[in-house]
Image (cartoon, rainbow, N blue to C red):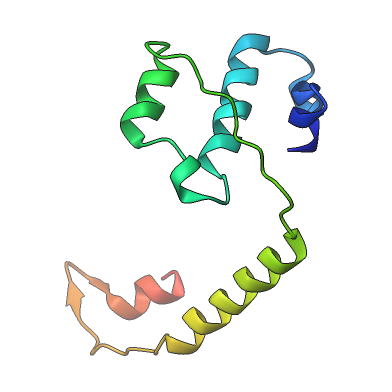
Length: 111
């Protein structure tokens, strides 16, 4: 996001690509990624819009201002969400079964 705001979005490209990419395509994908991950859902494009942008039927709209987002709070909120999700998960067990010489236990243990 900082690179985009500074007008240097290509600085976010993985150096392992060794500049072997089409600049316009990378700029499009990085800008679109920022737009799709905007913290305000109403600022994000629909999947139909994404498809039209990627096929170059529509231009990519400007990425709306992110305003003053406290990324530490967002990170903490994501951590809490993961804790809630993992806390609700239960372990299920199923009886053993076999089919054609392959048993569920051999699948689980890698044979």
